[in-house]
Length: 602
Image 1 (cartoon, one colour):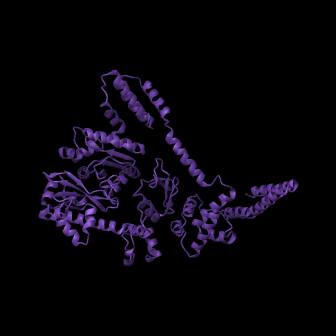
Image 2 (cartoon, one colour):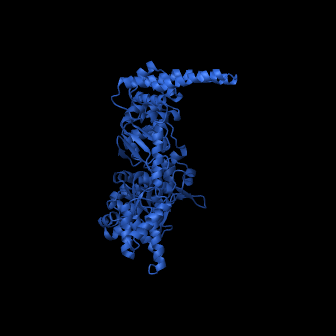
Image 3 (cartoon, one colour):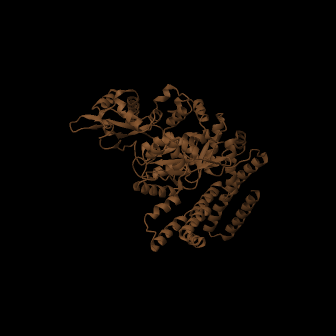
């Protein structure tokens, strides 16, 4: 449990891990004013509603309501326990935890932990074999023939599985791993004669790591004459092809820095491009890009460059991936590989510099690719096909938000097909009206209204006063002390009473004015969300005593008159039940007068 790690050490670990840096490893953040904003990793959205406050070391999503500090973020994001989150942050900042803390239970099952450990041992073994033994010479020579350097072999931890029957099985069993589990997770295969052998024997090994850098599976490339050519680990609870991108763990820092990711189809493309000076490349696992993978890319970068093979299959896959990424709000570019080349082949033939300059940096917009892609379906020497082609292109142009970009392509079409720019633009505008191109604007307006509603400005004066006062109390102990003395728990909103009670106790324990620490004391999820919401309310650094006193007086006035009005309304109800209209009317006048007084005081 967390009590085996001292509060002082936990605070030290928190202080060593700025929330913007940690969340920035999962979300592309942009600074707006004093806060940072990005796409929420906990729910799908196109407009950023996820806010990170560096000053207060908290995050909050105005869309789904999730919020917390750097520890709770990791607990939500990675399904970590509290200890696992602290341990991750400690490793990240090179802070050593006490040995007794390392015995904490993981959220992973014991079997999953053993599987990860087995993969880790095999990664090291395969790599050692290819680098330092005769058994790995075949694999080493193959990679060198493919132009893979020793540096890349080490960076990607490439390896080789010897073509022997029980070498790997014996190695893993000596490490204490059960044969049945190793077969279940596809590291070994059981033959008809009930013997077990290495699934990947005689192949070059590509470790497949998750986003945390843990090997969860292997890809294997056959040597000459072996079938199948490529062999992957089977899917398990730790490895699902549609959720993992090859090399994402190494590429993500470069993706964040460049705000751009290059999407490939295979391991060799990623490795070759890395050697060519393109370190922000990732690859799918031999399947079409999934929505999960696309959302992951969108969180990390605005621009995705698709660099698939130049053959027909690659072009079709490029189109499908482009449409998915565009739907999620990505800016899509297409690397144009001609002559049926794949990225690895291009680099071998023309070199890494040419690949960077002529393929990656010269990548086309999606619109340019789409016009080229669409032409394959029509015989443009026929008038009917030309008209159909132009209609389809104009429909796609109508989806572009940039009027400059729309006009640029319209001028291209005008010049190519001898049709006036005005006619083409008119057609585009009609498509925009039909498709409701202001959808994004409406979505943005809904978000703005949601933020306004959450600000509390539409609430009664006493409610706003309580919210504002609690916002100041969260960051100023002296204000909290004053409120405790004059108001106590006489807040009118029950949730505010709960927060005030927790806050008084928190400060009485001599804790710092730090909302990111305070929220760890709140176990109720609803109250924790409210605390984070209150902490994000704008406050003045030099608020006067008079303003604080005004808030206090507003709360106390409502507290006292609220009870009186409630009592009078009950008396009025009884008078009406007793059919005494005169008495009911007299009570109603008293209620109106009290309400007028409250309104005047507020």
